[in-house]
Image 1 (cartoon, rainbow over the protein chains, first blue to last red):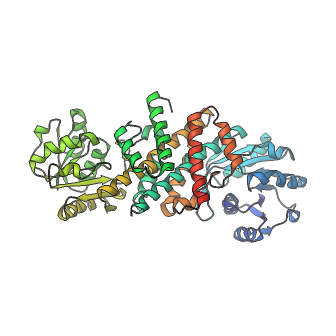
Image 2: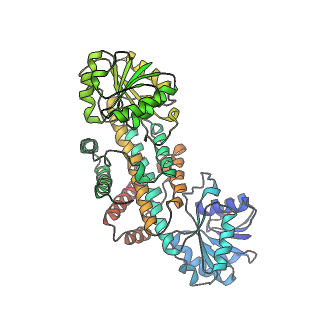
Image 3: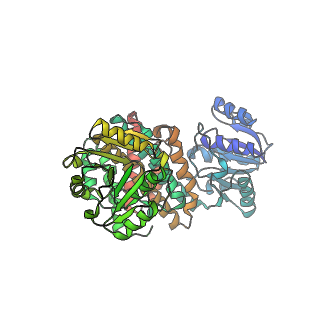
Length: 259
Length: 259
């Protein structure tokens, strides 16, 4: 497939590399910043552009991978070319594109992607939505050429996924940072905690989180929780987080809430 | 070394197996519950007992791996044998044992251990403290026979580690459960999120958490956070968690707080 990518951020970078590796042709990379466009374009053998007027008709698919609030103006601009247009946003409806073209879809990779961190793209879940069945099938085929985890997900479900990803990825990563801060303040290396962090994530690869919950809150071990809160006396923000999460764990346990 | 283990829970089970595999002799396994004692004792070729009066003198080391609040009465009982005694608790001072014997130490594995989940014990960080240098050295040698990650950690540091582990393991696991609940409520499989969870933990194996933080809060993307909060309208507990953690991420970012 001939693919044009609008954007040069984390998602655009990983998608471009994955498509290139799978034998697709990356035609152009657009970025407002020519330096960023050129950097990514060079890696995938594409033409770098920083002006939407330079967009070539020689493509089968436009992938819009930019900040959510500029998806609409870019889609409006691209629609005149009459090609298939998809965006990669978890939080944006398919409707955002349908306002300008019926040939629209979504190609949402559910993974935390950083430019400087390689990832095995075959394991990245790709969430596909098309404005019509033939579009969904075309996008599915494209997705299967780069990943073994392809799912059909509608706009409502995708928004839930995006929210769930905040709980499953962004918040845990922040808490890793809190843990590191505590260690650093007491002359200990973050290295001590890395095996624990990895094992915690590995455990839920073949168990449900509720089956492997450990710690003072799930045991309702008030003495330990009080001791921990005393240690956080000078850190009101951390104390609040500790309290809110511990209470949530305790309440779910006590209520026997099925999870 | 001849080792007697008091307890048959998650930590006792993994320690007994690791010592056995490293060529040490497990002499006795004590549990109040004879069934549990027998189950673990059978696996490691030890004698099962459920009465502290049946403790044999034929050992070099007592490892107390029981709930925090019964460490003291058990240590008091064992002290008369005059052997080296350690506990495995992150939250308990070495002093708890020193009240009864000078030959005391701590052997704290910093890992989330479940009976039904195997773990490569060589990667488990073991935090060692001894009441005297010769004891510390003896415990270090023992620790190195089962793990490649052995650290000297004093009682104050160990308490911080225990607290940090709540942030790095217990809280993230709870948040995985929240994410799963959101998916289940909208007919999606937890499988969709598992690669994201694993990658998030893998990222901080060679990066610092602050370097790889993603999501709406770190971008201070108010529109997305408002949309997420609207989706949580009927879940006040989750709304609170979302708000507290997002605000913490935003504030740390804005303050440029070094982490």
